Each structure stands twice: as structure tokens, then as C-alpha cells.
Image (cartoon, rainbow, N blue to C red; front, side):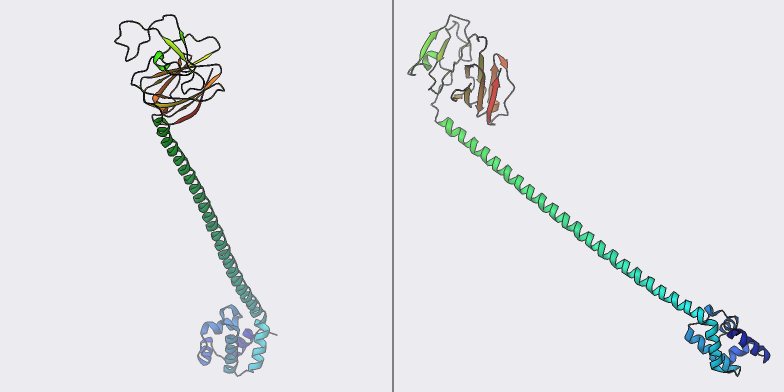
Length: 306
């Protein structure tokens, strides 16, 4: 069976009608009439409107409308089926794109929530660490303040001493278990108070009992260190409270005023605690030691050994 377009064209030409005349009679646009005759269904509107054009065209030529519709379905059926399939595919593609876009939005929202949660947890952990650090620092500062307050309290119990360092003979007065050894006359030891004296003095070593607060201390003494022994000399440049533990013995306390010196002897080591680390100079076996800290700082458990 010939196509509907060829059929319409043969009848139109047989009746001597032009395309424009048919378009005028049917009120169909000229390009649609040509497209229908040429079988170019892609230029025609949807199938419903195209069937209306076929009926009008058949009516204008005096042809059977149902036969014309049957010819149109035979000629254009496959085209419109493919067009419907393309429309369905297009709709399906649009739906799939919409779903993918929705999925991307959902994934983006989930990732954003996860990142915000992680940031919140990290900031919370950092704040917790900062608070713990601040609390520990505050606790350490409080302990340091309490220690600094305790030092004047302990030093307040020390008896008042004269500005000048007392002679060994004066220190021994009234001290229990005191033995005095007169050393051979040596070069005089000069201090700020003895600089103006013209005659040398005999240097004495006071070896106090181990139970006294100044046990084992020799003030302004110059002795020869025996091989294998340790000798510790301290000189106060500022008021300083001093605790010395010789080897494994009991700690010994002393309050040194500016210009005062102290001397200890031991075998293995000395352990110092200074109430004013920057106010004391130290020598171990005649070798100057490095500063133990700034002025006013408490220095604890300083170990000096050979």
C-alpha cells in the first residue's frame, strides 16, 4: 500500500489543486501539507494533531476519512512508536537525573554533618585538654606559692645573728659536744669585716655534733681537702635558707646572710635545697658551680657529686 502522502498528492494533482489551495481549504499551514505529502512526519505536530490534518485533507479531496486514517497509521505508525519510545526514554532520563541529584544532595548533607560533628568533637577535646592544662598549671602555681610562703615561716624561727660572721670560738660557746682543734697558723682569711685588721688571726675549725642545726659546718675555714673527699663551699650574696644532706646523713639547715660563707665535707655527694637559688654561689672542691636558678626561686634536690 502506498503511503498516505503519496496517495494525497496523486489525488490532489488529478483534481488540479495546488498545495496552497489545499492549505487554504483545510486551513492547514502550507509546510504541514508538504510535510504530510512527503512523509516527513518529524515536521508535523503530535500524532493527535497529525490525524486531524489527515481527516481535513481527505475531506477537502472528497476521500474516505477512515481509509485515509488507516493509510496514515500504516505509513507513520513506526515513526510515532519510536517517538513515543524516545519520549519515554527522555522522561526516564529526567527521572534518573533527578534521583542522582537528590542522592548527591543527600551525600553532601551527610558529609557536612560528619565534618561538623568531627570539628565539634575535636574542639570539645581541645577545650578539655586546655582546661586540664590550666588546672594543672594553677595547681603547680598554688604549690609553688605555698612553698614560697613556708620558707619565711621556717626562717623566722632562726635566731637573729649579727651582720658579721661570728668567729669559730663564739659559735662553739654553749654548743653541746663541741671539740676545738687549733690548726697551725696559716695565712689569715680576710672578709669584709676583717679587711681593716693588720694582724692575722688563727683560723679555727668548728666540728659541731651531728644533732645540731649547724652540724659539720665550718665557717670561714681553709682546710686542705684529703684525696677522696668532697668539699662544698657556699657564699651568700643574698639572704638564703639552705638545707644540705651529706652522703646519706640527716639534712642540715642553715640561714646564710649576704657575705656569709659555709663549708661542708663529705665522701660521695651533697644534696642541696635553696630557698633563694640566685642568692648563693657554690664551689665543689674549689671548682665554681653554675647558678642554680634566678633570685627568689626555690631550688630543690640539687645533687652535687664528684
